Image (tube, rainbow, N blue to C red):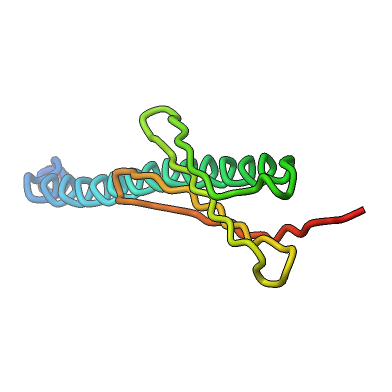
Length: 131
């Protein structure tokens, strides 16, 4: 009986080098996949922040234009630095469109980020109100 116990202990003595390498390989693959996933998520969060900032600039520009007298509303452009990114705000005004005494206003905000050039646009129509 003593021999059986000794034989069993010899078989279960430890983890082989091959088992260790397989386990480490699986861990490395899982860690690499998670690392890539996390990097993509961080980049996407940064890009989403940039889009939010751009929409904020576009909305602010529309509010600034809305506060102007109707006759003073005209095409214009401005830049807004924010951190390491500069946003360019272009306001395009088309008079008498889509009808007389109306102005079609399009605000486009553009910027560059590591993923390339991006832009957002908001459009509205203002009309002259005569009292």
